[in-house]
Image 1 (cartoon, one colour):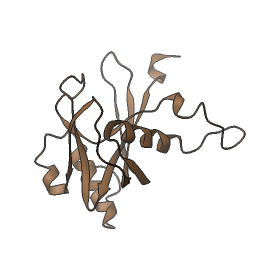
Image 2 (cartoon, helix red, strand yellow):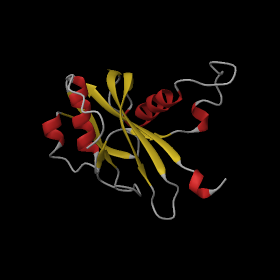
Image 3 (cartoon, one colour):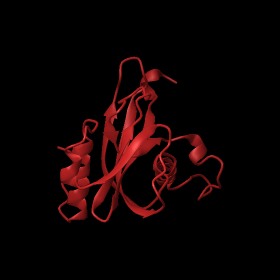
Length: 159
């Protein structure tokens, strides 16, 4: 496959519980964005669907949703529900495969925070409180978009 046709698919969750959003601090040992605050998520892996029965003769459905549930469970130890689309972004770092990132809003369903070794801290914050954290670029705006969606004032596309 030509390198310009290869990319990673990443999905993230802006998890809301009682009007507060879950943010996680990346471990100091992480190569990308060490010690910065973000939301849970990660890469789509073919194992997320290849080992389960197809939903139709040809296709698996809810692949991204299952990936997101797995990533949130792995990184934060909690379960989510009611996943809905917020926005998307792409990057193209020099010398690496580009990424397509799909950002979603999800409701907290159950569980206690139990961090993976990729994360060093967690906080449930309001939109205003989130602004005081060293968030990865764009995360604050995505949380604001999610808040607008929850309050019936959907902003549409990222600005």
